[in-house]
Length: 518
Image (cartoon, rainbow, N blue to C red):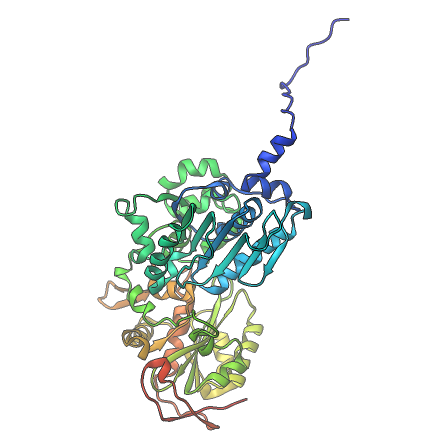
């Protein structure tokens, strides 16, 4: 009987996987992580390139939410297990962000089989250390997380990776950190410095490195857009060919997943282009230049409690306890696309301190009313100014009836917005003696995004973009809080406390400030 010829695709027998092939795969960072973790990790191609990169100097210009925090932790963990004399130092613009990398590394470590991972020697919120394969504690591998302070080498490691994450947001620390990081590499046989960030204006060390192709010619440059990420883009290969020649709206509609479209609808155009499309927005057109804003940012570094820890509160009760002057509140109302933002500003008599920010995303108005009522009753501000335009009209009316003179609805017209923007600008002009704000990247980005434009009638208009999808919620809630303190309202009667805040604002204060402890 003649054997019938098989129809269909040719079946190629896969190459036999030998123990050596498996060992070779496990020796790579991507192979180690993808083959051993349970459930198995999967990486996009640009993440795999990052895992395997060995360039001594590299700079990544990237969009937000592309998984770089996770993949940075993953690479550090893989190398800490595969190498026997290794350190990775990850510095972020905030200590809490660096600690997040340690949490990611721990999660990956816990997902590995015991016989393929080293024994932990140190395990805390800022570091992981492992014993060497020989079992000696004197040598080993470590992952260290820190804020934006100077980089200090630890030991004489054979291999050292330094990662500066979201470097554009290091503010005045960027030169200090960078200048300290480069010499540390000279003390090791194999070292790498990786600078990663979303852009923040055409200023600062990150922009200098990215733009300075001649001065910083030893850097390998990589740019990663939202359409490089499979969770945000429906067709990555085609988008890489076609997206750059399209306008933002066109490529979002053509290639964006539901997740990406939701992000786009929640932001103004210019902010989206900066945060997800790697556009350096020139802050020379900003009404609040980046340098002026950073001069008013609290210090969140240092041993023990930082200045920011001491000055800000985590809840309304702590806010009342930390208030030493007149407390004003601002509430910008959002529902679906925009988030509602609550900001409290403490006028100490020698400068204003942003004590607390709270964000309410997609919260129904009943919940928002309850939260604002708690703020009024527990924190006891002299006034809360609330946006009564559009969605805020009903909420503002109900709160006004309930709390009378303590709540002031503000219509968002060009005139009122101009008055509030100018008043807030005057505080920032005074530097630390005018206002202090937390080191919050979203708040800083929104303040810098505010532009003063001339309308067709010759009046000024203050907005983030000719686009009504978003209007700088955090900025306007801050402006409202500042407005709440602008009319010299009588302070609430209560206990008096003596406050010496000369260490904060640089002057001697002996005045008694009224305050109520609840």
